Image (cartoon, rainbow, N blue to C red; front, side):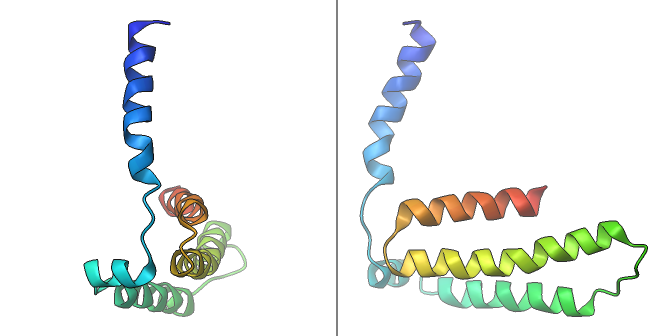
Amino acid sequence: MCRLCESARKIIVKTQPEAYVTQNWQTFTEWKPGFPDLIAKWRRTIALLIIKTDLTDQDLVGQLIVAFMSTSILDIDDLMLLTVHNKHIGAQKILRTLFERIVT
């Protein structure tokens, strides 16, 4: 195995257990008390953007953007549901999908 691959494997093995540390919802909200309010504000902002966006039939890009915003609200709900029930791996996957959709 090459030195670069070996050092990358050591980094992954070294950090992997830390990624799977269990943390319940109560501990998390004590650590980050503003998180639930932040998520609620995020959902409201997206909903307002969807409502305030004026689309025409010819605005295909705008329709696509609004569709992405609409599905991101559902992703946020799924993310919160998984997080509250300590399903961190699933929440990370939803968060990755949400991030990719927003950035793209």
